[in-house]
Length: 144
Length: 144
DNA sequence: CACAATTCAATTGTGCACAACTTATTCACG
DNA sequence: CGTGAATAAGTTGTGCACAATTGAATTGTG
Image 1 (cartoon, rainbow over the protein chains, first blue to last red):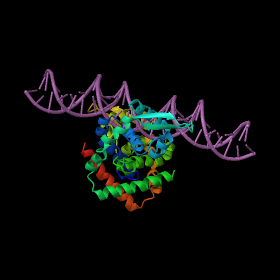
Image 2: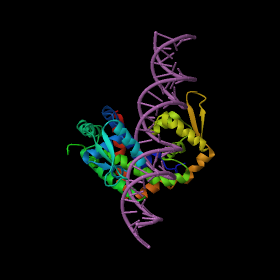
Image 3: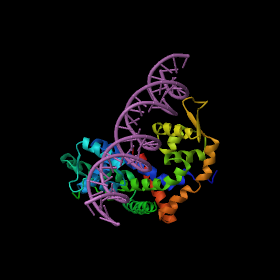
Image 4: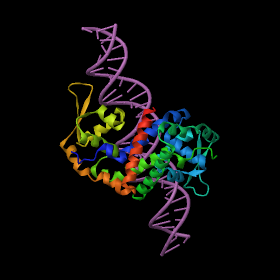
């Protein structure tokens, strides 16, 4: 019996639980903005730079068109983004922010602080966690 | 523009990406076993101790009956578990392993090693990551 | 230039996550 | 003891994640 892998010993489960807990902390704040967590991630990418094709968004976030297409349709329904076929390459769909989408950025300043407040970790621990997760994700993705 | 939170700086996104990458590493192995990752988590709990009520499984995994009820129905369909109303408390449903469910444990020995191999982190780094994630999850969950 | 291979986005289908609600059972307290 | 509160599991509905497929546009190569 003790030769079976145990739940509490699995780093994988620790990641899964931490990720769920983090999005749960964000949820009430994002609810006020009318966004889900993945929608917020897409908006973050667009606030940094736009227009972005569906493919570029997917590369940044690690999501495919099967996830992004309906998500972007919902963001468009909310009036936050617009989608239009690229003129140069008609395969591409460029996603741009509307005025409302751009304006929403100002209301999200407090969002990351929420996690930091609830984390119960020192700035140094956060920093190290962030660095280790980055190394881990890169190594895991390159092993596929 | 630079006052907007940026994707790469968000620990939340690092957790989200790492968790997805970890389950992606597990996926081909679990596919061979005919399990999804959440189904594997449920089996891990049952291999440690059974029977378990739906509520107990949910408490271990942080999942509610809305997620577990259909998942357990699928595990039952695979012939790995059985569900029966508890005799003492007819509100409860006890989940027990079938012989096939118990036997499956032997085939999962190599699963966690897969992640360790692909992680590219030292044992010490893994250990520290695990500890930090545990602290973080506990703090986040208690802040809700 | 023709046309096969590739790329991009969308769609379909399965399964997970979670909120809200329903129903059945048990518990608590008056 | 009886009834209202609490608890357990299930269902419904929405949205995300991902595999597989489709169809349109582009690219590369002969």
